[in-house]
Length: 151
Image 1 (cartoon, helix red, strand yellow):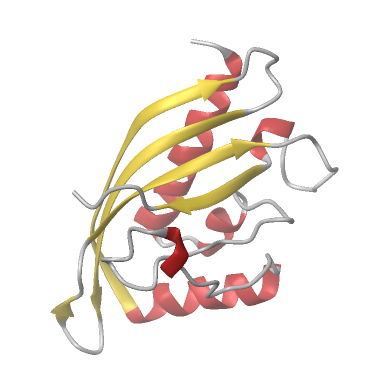
Image 2 (cartoon, one colour):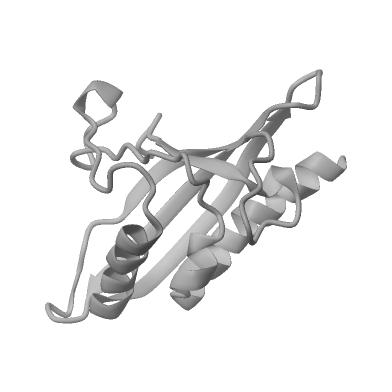
């Protein structure tokens, strides 16, 4: 396994740990400062034409507050993730991972289970831009919610 592949797997595993432990600070370490996160409008929005920008361009304080609110008002029932594919360019200057994600949250104030969503997410390597908190350029990942299939 290449070093690049190991670093991408580490990003995926770090995100999984952040969700599992509801650690908003750990979650914030995976986002690239130029990221924009498109999100499906509903669990049936397979076509990106229907997607929305719930959070806008990455803003540490706004995104942190939003994720903290989720963690404060919901309990994680399960968080199943499987890396389906990691593809690295011939030039070793770009890569992506396809991750199958099945996450179920329970709203603590409703005490009823919310829908479980399954989606694919791509982690894309970018060049170093001097962001603090990342030890290597590969950890500067765009996190794109790419809903290709609903399983």
